[in-house]
Length: 245
Image (cartoon, rainbow, N blue to C red; front, side):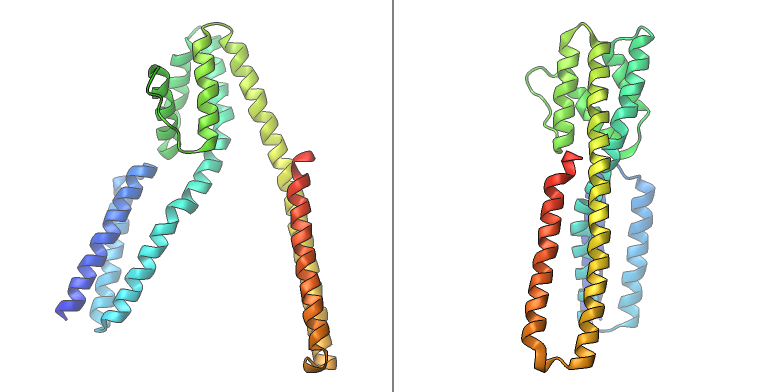
């Protein structure tokens, strides 16, 4: 029982440490961290009380730790999409601020303050790089690196800031339109692949039920290879043409 209790406390400490690191990186609220940490402690205590086996407890803690290990990568992917969608409204606020007579930096800072969570933290780091001429803060994502360079060039120009911000907004809007169109093409290819796969599996099931598998296993195996090669070719062609729409 002492071993199981020690494992449960160790597992809870590891999970709490990972949660604290994620909260710092993604600007989660401490209320969310405490709630999840308490829930994790309750579940671990339940496993400890209901199961005297340390193997079951190790298995649960291991699955939880592996899930939390890959969760930031998945979460960062969705947050980058959210950040990409926030850039154009951000520039709209900057344009309104500059038009009202404010400087570029003040307009940018006010537009960033409207944001929240992880997006606000990333944009604030970008804003801090404007005042650091030599030690520029390195952005982690390629999206922010490109946006950082554009913003720094606009800030250094000291003239025609409004026209440059509008030009940057048009560029981002054009990229968004291309991305949306390419997404539509990719979605169509996926739907066609799903339909063709369903037809192939239905036909394959019919052939096996009517004529057997052993007598035609060579032809079935060969048809499966050709079908898989066709799917790979379709997606490969789709990746090449999606930005040409």
